[in-house]
Length: 390
Picture 1: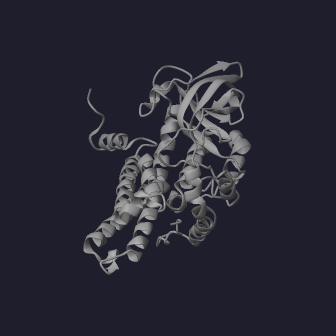
Picture 2: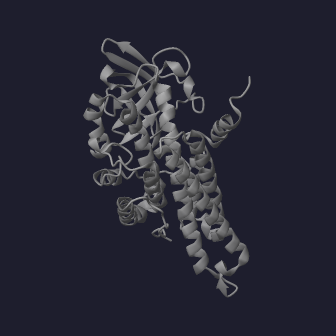
Picture 3: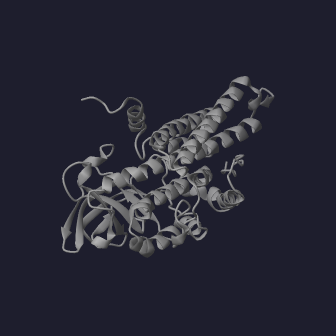
């Protein structure tokens, strides 16, 4: 059965502009994204033209300054846009979140000159970004990264390999964390590297369980030379910049997770209403009705949690703990809801003829990316009980 358009979520939005924005996103999602999602994911096709369309519609720079082409939308609104996109296709929703993550360093820590020179193309000029922190030997322990940037006159020469890079090989720019000094977090600096830089190459995309349409690849830096004007922030500030981006990025993952869960619930409800056994729709049976009720309740709880964290961020208040909670709860919810959706459909749920098996495979990665859920529990515990004693 082909994917159907998602049932509209009854959203509480702060302005008429935000309501119009959500209507625009739903229209694009239903017309351009959802109808092609299943076939393109099965074929492993990256929908670059969709990101071009989103850029032209002003949807790739929503949280950022309008002076440079951004939409100046609060995170409360931006995250709901991500949810709508992920409900239609996770490759698109997560791709927008990653692009926003990649743009964060320059938009937040760049100089005025850097922002004037680069941000308009990044936010509304059709470019697509990637975020390079993880490496083959440094995932959760990101501060142990080994990629090096060595000063050579007015340039930096970057050498090393980044791993698990969303948009690796197709991005137009890479925000790269590289070691410029001592071991540990204080020796890391951020750089903005163009995608066509000499010496930059990508390995073949990873063969993943889900999100096959989103390329994830190692990115190699073989003596890539960039000018000091592409260093973002101060030397040694890179790890702080990376963590700042990840706090916001975790909210993006949370919103995408709720989008996937909502899509699975929509499909499960539709199937339960149409499938008849023992002379009546299976939606009439109490055991299944309670399952659907629990799925819907967890989705609403996750949505409320990520929005509460977003409103703290919008108010300029600390939100790192709440971002970790939202990422943890929403991605665990997506895994549970999509698994239950497969169960609702029974044998049909286990086939590629229905979308819920794809949603289940996609949900799994959300418990891993941008800090595993075990890392999120560590972050939350540190806020509650302080750092671990050694």
